[in-house]
Image (cartoon, rainbow, N blue to C red; front, side, top):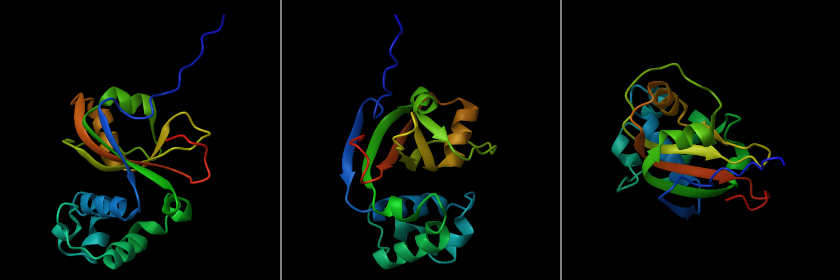
Length: 173
């Protein structure tokens, strides 16, 4: 008798999940995190949005037009984003203690990084569910996830993730 393979868990345990109505929130999180000088796109974001606090989701004042234009200029033209992501169904998944093992088992790092630094939180991580793949594909947050996987510590981190799927996909979320 052949053992059946169980489907990976849809979300980490103890997740708070809510529907995201627009990718604007995802873009603000991404820009807020990438604004930091150590991040790959920081110089591109900083010259268009000099005040990081404007991007803060908890009281930031960045206008929708500013967020959309900066994101499009910096990231929106890359193949990882595109129209499919703009029109996708998105879920915001907040986890107080995301387990390293869950990430290892359920996330495919598309562009691993060799950078080494301490990771204290994973905010604004963007995952994509391709129905043809077993694992979520990591679209944004490669440097932080790669550094955490490499360090293998801490065992858990607070996390805010966005998980998307194409609108016409079967109900996977």
